[in-house]
Image (tube, rainbow, N blue to C red; front, side, top):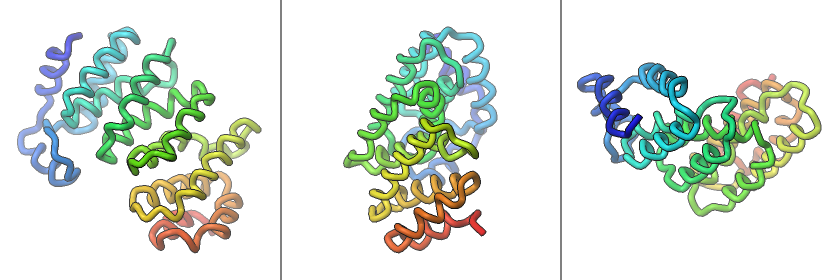
Length: 225
């Protein structure tokens, strides 16, 4: 599938009048086509089924470069799959997108694709840790979002627990960051972890809650008794 063919297929899904509302909502100046997310889910599912891994990576790279909102979301969805073999090119492409993040919606879709690749090869956490030292708050935030799968184990294996504690160390460094999106990312991570390991979140908050913004403290403890 060529980029022109993919864009033609996306243009056929446009809902008139929707793009203006999307621009108002996301507040990031770029082109919005006005396509509902369920329609993007359906079309990219078909592309994943019909294209080889190499073809998907190539198309995802081209779609991302358009800087169209739906193009970037579709690029991420093309690579959001638990099993991709080989997946080195997919991972490298996702990593290459991180410096471009400027929108929580696009970043979250890309990070969902990245989560699958990180779970497939947890050694990639070393590369993710470098993001925590970035000058860009979007890149620092991505380190928390892409590691969210490690909040979900009720009985983590030793290697899973090691990753969890590593990310909590990042969170401990983030708690004094004044950037709203960084505070929100820490709160999101702790909130999700509290569903599976409330004692660990309580311990974290005991040490660091005074340094967090009030909204982040509230969000972090949302599911605690």
